[in-house]
Image (cartoon, rainbow, N blue to C red):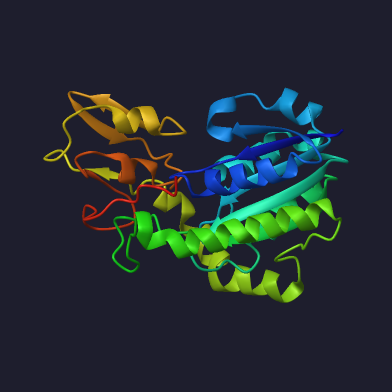
Length: 259
């Protein structure tokens, strides 16, 4: 039985939810291990030992998150000859979200054998454009995601898996409608995290939860250091709702995740 390494990056639980579903379903045919990218540090041993790698990640502006892109760049040589499955989570659409990372892997000699997109609940709690929903409000969307994950895994096992987003039209739509503009301002957006000192009580939860150590405590208050990866974990975890990233006002309602 071949070894499958499922490596996910998840800000508020959406991608972890999908990664868990896929890992369980695919364990019927693979020895399967599940890894949180933010917690594994050096991934060399994991990648070397895997026959197949499943990368699960959210999409921001039709672009994969920085930690997942860094993984592919850092271990570039280990993707050569590797079979890779991609699972991408999004609120609405990204056109070629999975393929945007898949093309980078293929340039390094990897082989994408399957790719799929999964619509998940909104977690941008400080943005007023889309409402944040929790619990039963997300039941239908999560059930659709679960069924899509089961179907995707079954098609992988049957050797008939889709490769979502790899067509030329999807590539063009993803690039010109979102990624071109997102990439131009991504660095600027990484510095947008703000902590309201009037709300912050210095509990340190955001520092503990940040997957890239962007936040620290100083004089009883948290502050960011410009390397935010826009995962929105701190915005949704802060017990005082003191943190904003892309929005202008503290969240009225925080996303609690799908679990």
